[in-house]
Image (cartoon, rainbow, N blue to C red; front, top):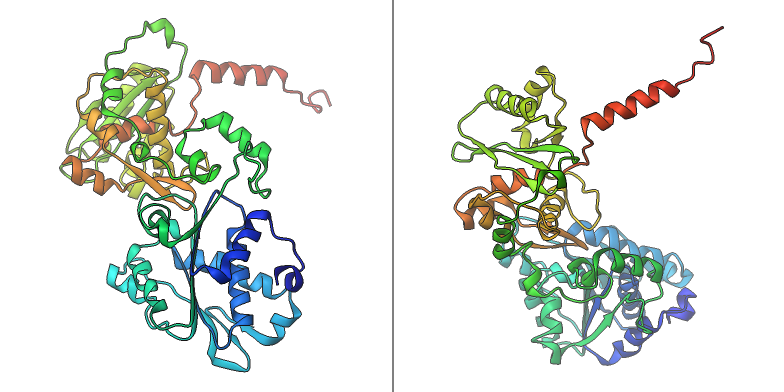
Length: 452
């Protein structure tokens, strides 16, 4: 059907899925990033709608936005390639139906509110019963398990039923993980990889790109495991760094000639509440110096302290936590004092697309800096604040767990670790180097009208 109706030739792994579909009620596609799994879901849905009498099809995904932008858009894309499907079916924003039988021959988009309880999530998929039923679950790696538990009921009275899920192996729990592990005997599982050394790799992912990513980050990197190899990251990798690694970094010592040529950066985490301190953390290259902790200070007092330390130490740049507006006043006051602070939004966009936001990127940069030999001051709070946080995946990007969850487990806010992380927010050049560049630029400027 895919060849005849859509005029395309499926990839080998896609052919495997299409061939087994009529004979397998449960199919799980565990995939790397970008192999064309959503297209397969759309092909199967159109096949079921076109070839079964009065079928009922439901589609869901990790979020309503994901469903709308991916699978539902894919359904429209393939319908427009087929005059037959355009004639027989009507596509709408949340429903596709046969024009001749709109109430009994359809496919619907199912979604749940972000604030929904587990029971409410499961209720999204209730009421799907008939002789021919199918459920498609896109990006199932992060779909709540209650949703899948409800979906399993569709086979109770059907003549033919199918559950097809597809996703990246981003979570060590949930529908995709269970289908690939403890419930493997119930599912037909296909593993799709972009490994450049695997002859069965998907051709839709550039082998050159895959090799570059592996060279850059290493074969054991969790982002590489998920997005290139299509494998689950081991549970031991869901923390950024171990407590022993942090403690060992506190024992390191470097002679100043190893780092005195590096930029001096102040990372300033502004306390949100009365019991949370504000922390000023200095770092110069491979060495982080003892931080300064402030409590119960206003923006004028805090900015004044930062300015004095910056001047006395000769700081080349100050990175201020501006999340939620708490650090905005500090930045304003620092500018009045003649400094040029950089206001960092933890929810901002990361430079490296592996990370969901700036906060995650900074935390990983700090952990990797420690692993590369970074020297930490003997600050006991750092051991827990750096080793307790865990990360997971949102789509194909890594994301650090929410700060309030870390605070709940630690019994305090991780302000020391956040302040250290801020020193990695943006590249900072030494003031002397900046001046030299400016002077060189001035000497080479040419004004064609100078002698006019």
